[in-house]
Amino acid sequence: MKVIYPGSFDPVTYGHLDIIERSSKKFDKVIIAILNNKSKKNLFTIEERVRLLKETTKQFPNVEIDTFSGLLTSYVKEKGCSTVIRGLRAVSDFEYEMQMALVNRKTYPEMETIFMVSRAEYVFLSSSIVKEIASFGGKVTCFVPKVVEEALANKFKGGF
Ligand code: PNS
Image (spheres, rainbow, N blue to C red):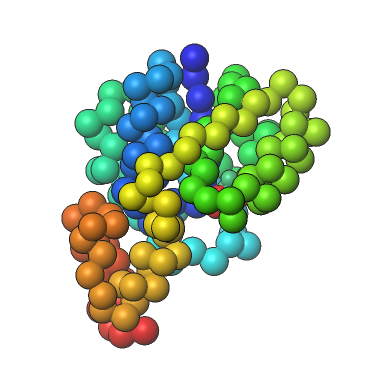
């Protein structure tokens, strides 16, 4: 079965990579779909996010990196797929995830959203928290791979 793992990945963290690794073992193919909506304020450009994901997932042969803009349901249909994976950390994620899954099912009734529960050690982890720590010069070594840490250091080199 082919599944799509959509997100902003701004930037990719060990939390995302855990979901990617576990999905790659359960499914034949995992397409990581990075959202490229102009209205979203991201720290990293779409090209940078693609590069970081490519570098950090190259050990998984059945994982492909792609980008999309507009509606997730349109993209998923276009890809000939009907299953989406999302990671669930805490109860705080649940409301938003439930809303998205239900809205998406309204526009694409065949679409299923599968939730994968995050590993306990990554429950607190988010791209936003990593960006905040890095922006103040804090160490993010245990939250993101080295390439991402370097990319963050580069972004914040000139100060905040
Ligand atoms: O990593 P994120 O930011 O939690 O991912 C959110 C994402 C990209 C899955 C979501 O914002 C999305 O699917 N956006 C595309 C626009 C869309 O389809 N919106 C309707 C769903 S409620």
